[in-house]
Image 1 (cartoon, rainbow, N blue to C red):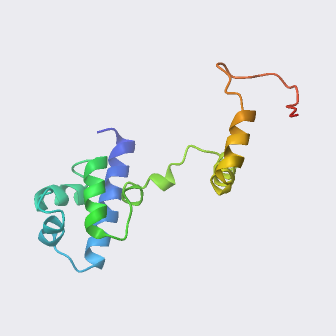
Image 2: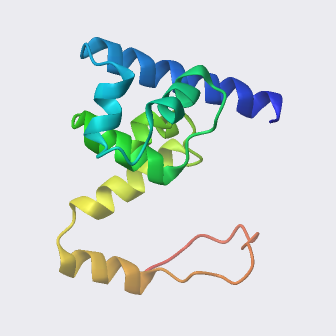
Image 3: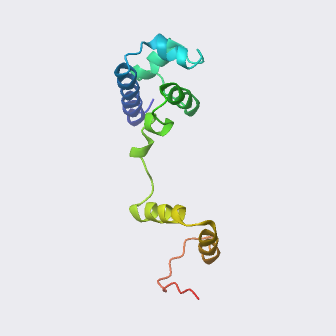
Amino acid sequence: MEPEFASLTRRIGSRLRAERQRRGWSLSDLSARTADQLSKSRISNYEQGIRRMGLEAAHQIAAALETVSPAWLLMLEEYNPLTDDELRLIQGFRAMNEARQRQLLDMVEIPEQQDTSSEPVTTT
């Protein structure tokens, strides 16, 4: 495992262990709450950073914990590739009603190649 991923895997495991312990659950308790789809040994390996947690396991564990998301478990919120402006655009788009979303999408052309021109964008 690459050092960067090993560190992240350990941090994810620590997050899982802390959440499980906060609830006062044993490894067996958490395993049972996944309908034994994840063994206590596997969960222990995740917590120790020995094994990298996949998306399916994160979904199962998040469902068992009930109050966390798979994204939180996998620390995805810390690795957002979007800029602040891109996030604002997405939030604004989601806040619009469907008709406004369609209008905006009709105005947007997705270029096949990166547009490097400095000409201002005009709308009619």
